[in-house]
Length: 116
Length: 116
Image 1 (cartoon, rainbow over the protein chains, first blue to last red):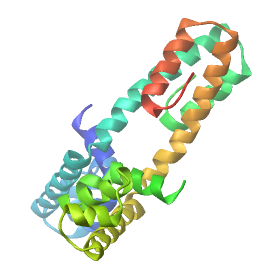
Image 2: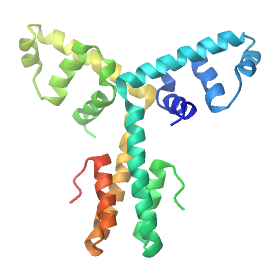
Image 3: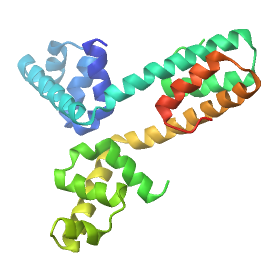
Image 4: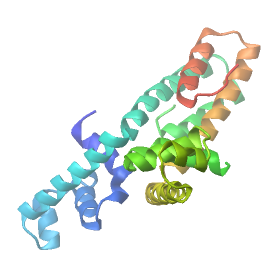
């Protein structure tokens, strides 16, 4: 997983433990793809200030993950569930079956993936 | 879910954010089924001290869950995955199929359930 995706997941899991400002800057930077300069301008602060706050936020998120490991666990489970979904999708191709449809739909609600 | 199961899950998810003492007392009380008196005796403190530390720990865990909601999300997902597992187990009964076996095995690794 690349760094963008990783930090984005950390934000999903632990974001509410950040200060409002840390969360807002990190969301703009990592999820909305704004540059440091754009965030700085929007909030009338220096680029350095934005950078420092984002780096501090990253450190806090990584510390929570180091302690709890919930994102790593989540990723491992997603991998397995994606495999299950693939198997079911493959079976569906050969055996038209309402129950397989239902299983796949439930799985898709959990793993939020493409299942067609 | 009853209170014992709920606190036990909160401990699983957020336990590492407690102090060593909070975690140890809560684990003895909720997971190892020791009484307040037994924990007090083992640590040469009063029953009241044990009680206070456990109550404080519960409060901290609930505060993390209120902010992050990860255990509630986990429970909802487990419900869906258990339904998926049931569907697959049912299909397996009618269609002997190695792929269904594999899907069920992977699911069982994620949801830690009885799948026979």
